[in-house]
Length: 164
Image 1 (cartoon, rainbow, N blue to C red):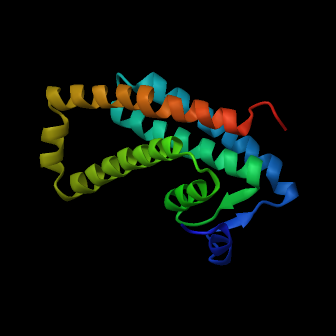
Image 2: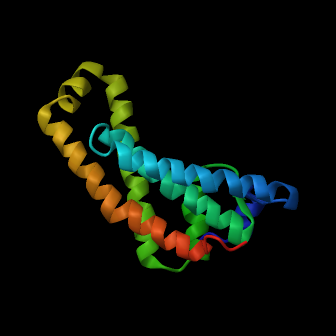
């Protein structure tokens, strides 16, 4: 396990200054909600974007928790560092499994994009088929229901939405 002190010394995280805290918290309170709503509204029509925004809702609410409860700001390698910090501070395996699943979905889509860049025609052919469109719709809905929603609900409880 990586210790928070090590991440602080490496410059991967920092402590949020008092004057910055309100702005930082406000940003992530709005950002996770925007991403969650985007995820919901696009699960059918734009499922790949739905998965991406679902993951970002999870990522942003995690950063909200870290800011609000621990005054920690992620500085570098934001996705991996956020998961490391969460793993260190929250000893809930179920919660960790959800964020790690969300991150894997996000990375898979990023890998698809990298492959598409290498071989655009092949990627268009495979992602443009009716089968793949339906597969992404299924995956995005499943991801929203089984991963994003439960994660966000648990994080809201940990944050104590409305508590300041």
